[in-house]
Image 1: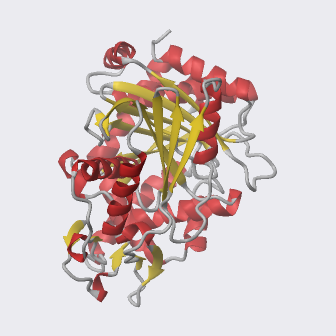
Image 2 (image 1 turned 135 degrees about the vertical axis):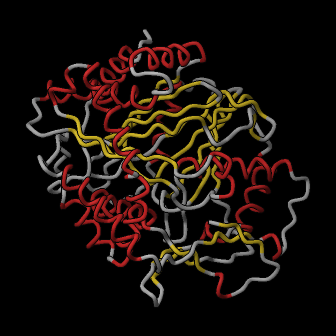
Length: 451
């Protein structure tokens, strides 16, 4: 994806073709909307020391949104059958997607978290709304909540958008003219068909292996799904605790093996819950998203989805023994990277764009007999947002509250900011009791080696 600056708006630049990964994300959004009424959205939280200027925040947000017509776009399909994102060139943004809450001195941390949870579950009110912000004032802190449509941003892209907003704040002149408009570009990818089909064959073999003992182990969804909310549990580790977790990862999984270690820890604690619940047979199937952008290119590829996936299959007997579990995950990671599966999946998914979303969503669930995964997982790694402050206020914490496609409606997510680790449990209301969620996070914390 390139960022094209235009002095005047050219009609043929009103579209950005969607990649195969983009179309899969659209399918996950479709599946989730059909199940619970709200699509595949996520939220980032910035905890600030002090309060930024609300007026300046509005000015910067309004200026930035007028520069990026993708923010008010919607999906469409071209005459060549390739899906694309139809841009909306809006010069007057009314109203700005920003609301403000103020908590009084009697409010607790639980009250704050309840508000953040409510915001994370809000629906977008139109097919052209994909982003909104909330400012929550609490004593001497401000919480900036950015809720976004995953069809428009992946996790690191959303972080990079916050960096763009920070840069807008630094810019003393927020005036706007047509030459400031920035349009992301992507080709239609209607070429190199042989390469795509070969990649498709290789990816298909991996899916057939995943589906060999389908369906995978999953926690049952509630009977009534419509308008169910997601619930969240967050553990924030300080620098010392994070260093200890990394040290434990290097000891038990190997140097630079943090992702296999935290994935193994997540599988291990969930396996204990599955056993306690007497969940039936089958293997654990866990897709893990990986960022395909070079680290220095994130700011040039902010919008849309630039990820691919690794797919891990864990037998229950492996999940029982942590050293065996770590070894299995490391071997699968090595084999998939060596075979080029993430790139093959990215390439093969381009062939799927011709399919309407209802058809693609059914095909995605075909391999695993109606399921998508046992649970969702990601380790975003160090944040794409690099500054230690936001709008002149020190950042005390920075974490994600992602909702999960339904099914499976359950996910564990790791994220680092300034070498401090956050872990988030996201679950659809009714899958876990509050006691189970608390116990799961406590057990995970212990498994990571932090008492």
